[in-house]
Image 1 (cartoon, rainbow, N blue to C red):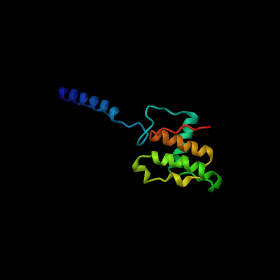
Image 2: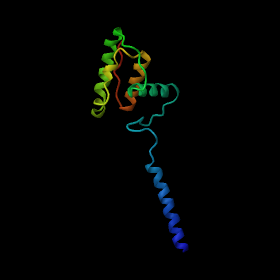
Image 3: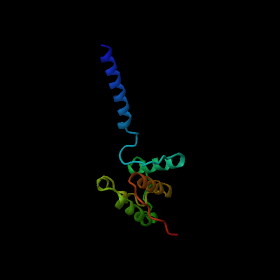
Image 4: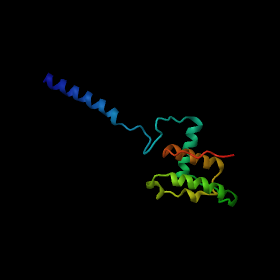
Length: 122
């Protein structure tokens, strides 16, 4: 009986140590590979995520913003994995985003899908 108890205890310890290996740490799909976002970066990421997932009410389309935003959004759309390209159409957002919103969307996509953003030329 004592031997059975010891084996059960050893088995429980081994099982519990493996659970930590297989536990997922919260960020579903893709991820922030080794990056811990804090403060303003976390806020920017969450805003971009909400825009990406159409969880934010956007402004009415402003024609003067369409062209410049369309270029940025085309780049983002083209950078998405094929599985996402059919799910979202970022180009439809052209003219509807504030500078803060489009910047947050670019930030989210760059981290979530490991996209290298183009350098802005001034």
